[in-house]
Image 1 (cartoon, rainbow, N blue to C red):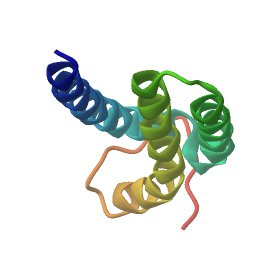
Image 2: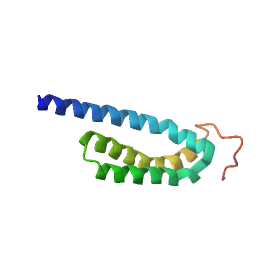
Image 3: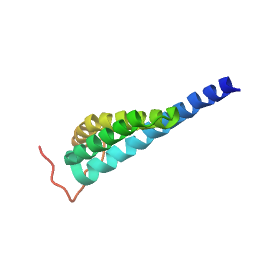
Image 4: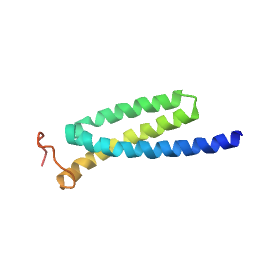
Length: 102
């Protein structure tokens, strides 16, 4: 019985990882559109908090999901700067209410 639970836990962690990564993609796009790259520290703060939570929580499922969330937040710091470059190339729309660096 416990062996089956382990298999479902792995599937649940995998599905959660897929959803978290999928969630961060539009979040990065929207964050860059509204605030530019100056919001990178929010992703850092979220990542640090989730990382601390991941280390402190004993439940494997919750700790794993928080760990994935933490490192997705850290990865988003890089992505927000790359999103700025994609906007400059015209691949994504510019926010007309913002001024952009050349």
